[in-house]
Image (tube, rainbow, N blue to C red; front, side, top):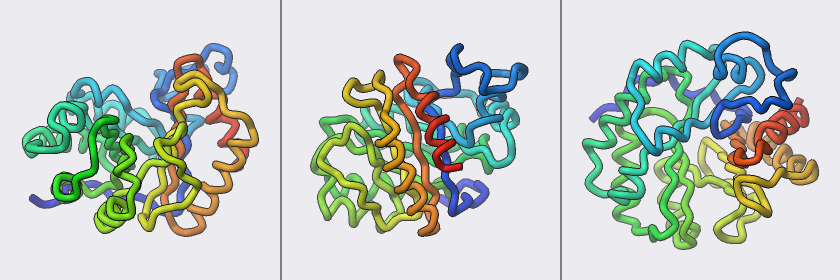
Length: 250
């Protein structure tokens, strides 16, 4: 199957956003007063991660409406459905992938990335992993990132296999294994920050954000598209962190 016709992604960009586009009440003054939640969010931040696609499909019309609600330079990262990653565990998913690609393709050139988050118990099996990611890259021409949550995915064999398909590994915090900031040889870099020490709740200190900013700058200078998504949304920490990092990067 040929690649779904998506506009080539832009390189040398830093894309900062949150997992979802809700704006906490305490930060309302940083955003326009009018427009939908997404329109107001997209007036300030350059990217967002859609997580609801993990739990349920969205109609093509919904993706099209989101596409038309944001500026030309805005980019969406979309999480691949759990029916593919968790229920089928990457195997025998051709029909599911085809449906998802057709749906998410309605974001057009504003689709910047697909996020594949794997279940913690899924071990790396080279044949299964290669077949899945090869099929996905054949169907859609956007960057793909892999958030593996089992230590076996952080071996040299796994890194090499993913790199041959230009699939970037997500740099998550808290990390699955001790992973210093060492970038893969892929066209994208994707930080996914869940909050630490309390996942989904804790706010990151400025010193940590400065480290991330340095890595994002370095990646941009190397010609990569560099993403940083804050998933510490449960207690409202994501948006302050995203705005701080945006300010740090100028």
